[in-house]
Image 1 (cartoon, rainbow, N blue to C red):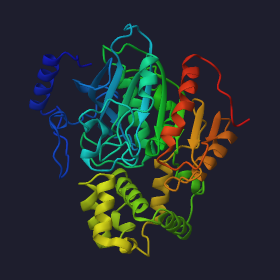
Image 2 (image 1 turned 135 degrees about the vertical axis):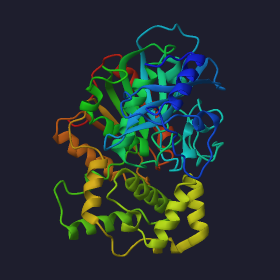
Image 3 (image 1 turned 90 degrees about the vertical axis):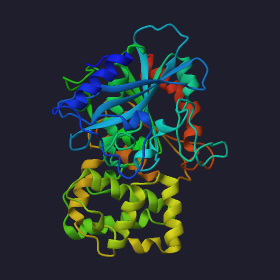
Length: 436
């Protein structure tokens, strides 16, 4: 395991860069990255999950908070070793006791390009800041929901950027099984920082893309319990999912023929192409699936022109800039970028099933928050997921937020509700089971 004092770490990385058996330089594509990211090594396949390969103390405008930026080893849906970055935040005034609770945040959509990671904001360790809301102060969502309450309670917060958003490699956007692994390994990595002194118990919470990631993580008990990682014996004891997506639950749980597969993909394409904003989400998902599964191609779903422009835009731009570009270039004609004759449909359905939430009983209680006016991630996905998991004996509760809440108001409205729920999990209280 690498040490974290500055000089030994830099020396170790330098020696690795000289060794043929060491790390290769990550591929960031056509964007430039800041110093922390540009100097990251690549991944050795014998690296341990959760292993930190670089760390740097960072400043924060939050009083009494200490923060770090880390790069750590993770893996994707096909179990290829990957590299991800994250921030870690905790109180620097409370006693540095051992066994601090740890809570892992899984962020919502920021984009697909390397420069879309939330840790790249100048002051990333602060409360959740949303682009869409009037008080948003950035071009992208970033920050940590319920940060003050969790820090004051003595928790350590870790927030992954996910694979492909700052540490090299194409981001597998909305491949929940990959982002789930990034969240799990962020817990392992944060546990290795000598300053934080965490225990083994963790709660994970996420919104939108991150909502899908955390419910996917809840089904990966074998991945969590495997031995030989950089930090074994972690335990996920609760899951908070805000507006989570689960594509697989909307598909048949059996092998389908090409005709049926094409029908399902056409329905998916139509559902997520009702406006230019949702089209960008869908384009990012197709791009991310191609990054994850080598037997899929962009021009299975898009026309040749569509595949070219989607790739050109999404490897350079984050979510909202990408939407503006599609709108500027195509206006109301953006749907013409989609094929009318989808190719390779059966392979796509198989990949979607593998990339999504596994149909197994979750390892911990789950609480889901949703708004009735959410048109970005239809609440029916959470409903179908809960029904499926309840049949498997899970402990799932769905909470409809009061008023006409949409996708982007969900985190703010849910925050006062889940703080106590999280505290109860760390206190060892039994969660009320909504399935009953």
